[in-house]
Amino acid sequence: MSGLYTSLTMAARALTAQQMGLQVTGNNIANVNTAGYARRTVDFAAVPPESSLSAGGGVEVQGIRSIRDRLLERRVLEEVPAEGKAQQLTEILQVVESGIGATGQSIDGRLTEMFGSFSRLADAPTSAVARADVLNTADELAQSFHEMAGRLSDAQRQADTRVRSTVEEINALAEQIRSLNRSMGSSGPEGRLPLQDQMTTLLRSLNNLVNVDVVQRDDGGVDITVGSGRALVIADETYPLQAVSQPPNGLAAVEAGGVDITSELRGGRIVGAIEARDVNIPDYMSRLDTIAYELVNQVNTIHQAGFDQLGNTNQDFFTPLGTADGAARLIGVDPAVAADSRLIAAAGVNEAGDNAVAKNLANLRDSRVLEGNSATLVDSWSHLAFRVGRDTRAAIDGSKAQSDIVSQIDALRDSVSGVSLDEEAVQMIKFQRAYEANARFFSTIDQTLSILFSIVGR
Image (cartoon, rainbow, N blue to C red):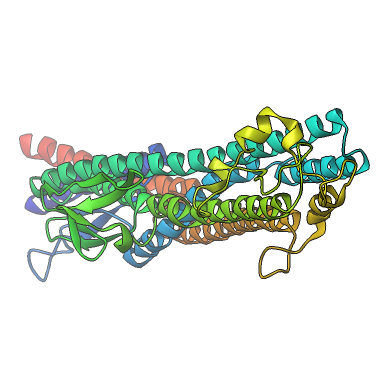
């Protein structure tokens, strides 16, 4: 009789175990589209027999665990920062590229128009219309430089805004991770499973923003450092980053505990924004300023050697610039010339109708005065436009290549941790059949006991 009771207990325990298997399978299927979810599995163990003459105690559930490959998960975290950096750099440079304008319709076109007006002035050096045309095209060229400098400055400010907003996002994620650390510390092993899924998602999002170093804690939580070992999250404490405006232009530096760590950051969207703001865009602005500065100097040098209609000489055409710094924002026709077109020097000698200087100004279009006397003003602008396009294309290609790498690692991770509906269907059938068999066994034992009771009761 006791053996039958033991069998009945074993069958009841088996029913509970197979039911747990069905529940875990159902939970896996329900979370097939949940980001960061790692499929669960039930660990079964045979209950040892009570004696050498016992068949065994059946099965028991030892626990539920997530299927994870720590190596693949770490590989994802290592590659995501480079992907975030390339994506951010691409987004910013595409904005810059769109502001450069099409060939012949930007500063290069305005340069050609101004030199063309000088050529027309050479054909009619005493014409008031030709002189007005020179002033008009020169003013339009100056405005083009101003607008281009403004676009680049705006792009730099937008990149700075992204740095500041990314710092806020990093701090928000750090706070969520701190909260998870506290929850994990007060949860049992099985209660940590959904928290681990959330942690995986948060760490990936954080690494997309900035490259961090993650150390696993014994209680399931993590400690996180950024830059050269600067604490960001330690147990249930956070150490927020700060975006602090710096002189002279007010752009933000990233600080941790009052220390500037901008140069320590290694990857993520914040580094992409910093690189665009501090490297790419300043390079474009410097090249643009150099073109404007050289244009002013070359035109003024030729213009000063000529005579205007009033017989004056040594007159600047553009307002002189002390340095190339900020030249694109400051370039402009000399106010005296702008107010009186008769002050435009077209003659090489003080004689009415002479056009020597106007010719020299028109010929400046083809003079190689930039890049070590290897490029004209238009060539130099074309090189600037090419550099922007090249950098943008490189960023796009880098973003695509890095996204492909992350996708491949994600696929490997999903092959281990992801939910496969086909596999879960097989598991569901397996647990269902096992449950049915154990239910039949339970029913058989129950019927046997009923028969014995009826016999004993007679």
